[in-house]
Length: 233
Picture (tube, one colour):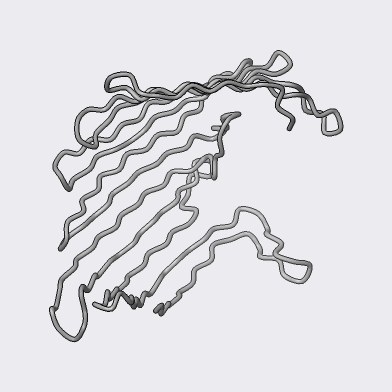
């Protein structure tokens, strides 16, 4: 897409990080793409240490159409090792009856012997900002990770970590569990810097319509489950 002109302003004012971007693109007649304005404004205020609170606005305008996304996000270190973060974004478009949103919250603890992460993300059906990329809309995702580590101090092993990774996706369109991934892993960090890990996995995926992988293989709609094991050095 050809760019006619644009301007960018970034910097810091006191405790605020500021970023502004405005670009005018030209039309591409062979694919029916109109010329457009793309604008982004971002402000983030430091709250001390690594904590912050911020907001963002993205806006695109072409051929009488407008798509604006508003967002708030933040990160708060409740202690040196415990982190709480999240964001909320919503899309406002001309002619749209509603304002689909996406939001997230995560709680993360990282210490040498223990760690965990609990996360929740919701992306409404139809959430599709004109600026940006949405991996999957109509999705509610939950994450849970636990870790226990210890240092044997022998056999050339620096640290051993036992982990569990768990992710669940629920379809908001169909009101049913769409996929899941549950994994157990044992990881060894050696004094030499080498790493060794072994893991087992139980996963599931639900297809709501047939999926053609190639001309000779089509997966029918339905629920699929499988097990996997991995050894990595």
